[in-house]
Structure formats: C-alpha cells, structure tokens
Length: 113
Length: 114
Image (cartoon, rainbow over all chains, first blue to last red; front, side):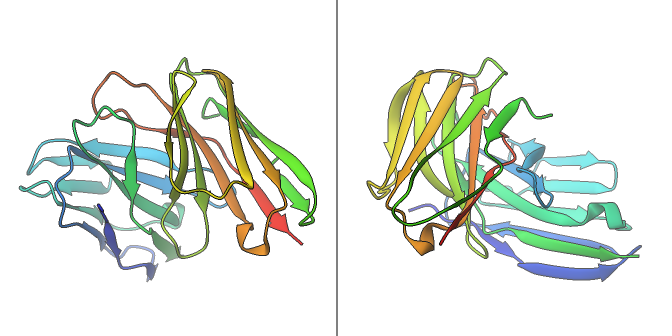
C-alpha cells in the first residue's frame, strides 16, 4: 500500500516568516502534485513535479521533488495571511495515467498578520 | 469557478433517509471520482469512473451507491447512513490518456448525519 506522510500537520506562524512542508513516502511516484484547499472549497492544484530533483517556483512558493521521486517539499518565503489554508500533496503511481492519486493527510497553515 | 459543480453544498439527513449527491463537470474530462474528507485524515478515494465505467471501489459500504450516466455527470446515492459517515464529500474529474494530469475538484457537499 502506498502512503504519503505529510509534516507538520499544523503550522501557525507570523506574517513574513518562512516555512517548509514535507511529504515523504517509501514508494516511488511518477509525479507529485501539490494542492491548496481553502475553507468551504475543494482542493486546487498548485503545481505538478515530475522529474527527480526538479524544482519549480510559483511566486513565493518553491516546490522540490526528491531525486528518487519518493519525497517532496514545499517552501514558502515571507508567508502572507493569504497563504492560509490546507496544503495537500498527492502522488501519482504507476505510469501516471491511471488518474489515481494517493493523498497525504495535509498540512493546515495559519499565517497571522 | 473550477468547472466541477456539486450539489447540494450542505445536507443534513437522518439515518433512515435516502438522498443523492450530484456532480457535474464542464471540462470535457473522461474520468470522475468520489472522495470522502474527514478531519485529520487523508482524502479517502471512494470510487473511480473511467469513460462511465467503474474502475475502482475502495471497499466502500453498500449504503453508498454511485451512478455515472455519462462522462459529465456523477451521482452518489445515500441510504441508511451512519453518524461516522458525516464528512465533506468531494467530486473530482480528470483527463485520462495523458500522463500526470491533475484532478479538478468541486467545492464538496458537507454531509451531516443525525
């Protein structure tokens, strides 16, 4: 059974601080997707990383896929209150075109002004 | 607007009631999914439909009955639910046949069982 462990599960920080969220597994994934979910809404895709060692940047968010494609991290620089939400990582197994995703349990981020 | 619409947004029902959740996607996708989201637990995949055919049932109790009449519509029929079934039910869609496609989620139905 493929599992994704996300840490920390909850993070409360002040505006302007940096943070990193980790997503780890013993399984290899064909890709890793990161989603953000706000209260009352469904998850929305932030980024997909596919190649081992890949780094993608989305404004103040930096996503990295581990060399062995078993882990990923999300780093936020100078967090803003608008970054508050639930961050979910999801791994695509097999050839990556079955549509099935394995989700981590999520990291709830609260950024206080 | 995500292109995936779920109704109703909120539902309160008794354990003996029968109700249905509806999901519609306007993205031209060919796969649709039902997930259950409970507090402090990972998103639980319930059912997967590819081209209207059910390809996955993750040991979901028979009190949940999915229906996919076409690639754009997905239903979840509910009957004799239990209090532990209270959760946010999310529908998603994606495009199969291309590698690593993301899933597009609706905003969910918040279900409360009395």
